[in-house]
Image (cartoon, rainbow, N blue to C red; front, top):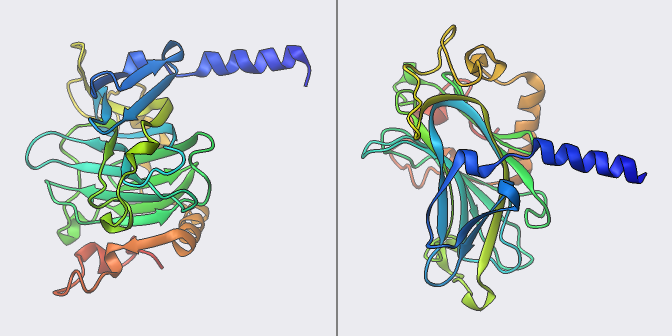
Amino acid sequence: MSISLFLCLNILLVVHAKDFNQDIDITWGDGRGNILNNGTLLNLGLDQSSGSGFQSKAEYLYGKVDMQIKLVPGNSAGTVTTFYLKSQGLTWDEIDFEFLGNVSGDPYIVHTNVYTLGKGDREQQFYLWFDPTAEFHNYSILWNPSHIVFYIDGKPIREFKNLEALGVAYPKNQPMRMYGSLWNADDWATRGGLVKTNWSQGPFVASFMNYNSENACVWSIVNGTTTTSPCSPGGSSSSSSSSSEWFSQRGMDSSSKKVLRWVQRKFMVYNYCKDKKRFSKGLPVECTAKNKNTKS
């Protein structure tokens, strides 16, 4: 590669890098969370005293949000790194990515969940098919009126459909903020809590970059600028999101479904929709509905 081409590529990376200072507030951790490199990198730290976390300045009612994350390397057992959407109040809605730390050499587990009106219990877990500590990987949540899709590096790993017609609650009325955190959960995170956090390996650090909320419907912004209504066809949003493909998408196309089936067949390690012992009185409605969103 020529020097001029190398410099050009690096200039492009700088131009397109997202500035966390514009979109994110570090909300807890007493200095363990830091925005670095002119706003392009956010590190969260965890030690025996505390973890750390951040939240978006804006709230969204529907959107597609993306974050590049490099997880805690080495022996990360007991730690949890998160990237999720959540509303406020006692009957909150929430869409979760949680990355469960591991003993060195064991694969990371990504734990997903969907809460509606304060009720979750919809866990699906997957092994990651790559080393998420070696470099940054892209994690995305698509949330529109028809379905919720979790993506890793553009590959769909889970779909939760809007089945309100069958009596299944769906998040649609409460705006959510994006959150990220790194915290200690060694009472459950690794092998059900059997493996505890080894604090001699700390402090632990997870890194974030390139947060993208351009395809999201901004409900409000902390600095005082607000919209008067959520996204809707023909309505207004921060980036004309109402007319974009993600908002009108009613389901996945055949190629996406094929990838989803591949991921779930190869890497799914827990699916609440298969846990008849836990749901001894009958599986949740969405698990048995036609065109169900469960592992096939």
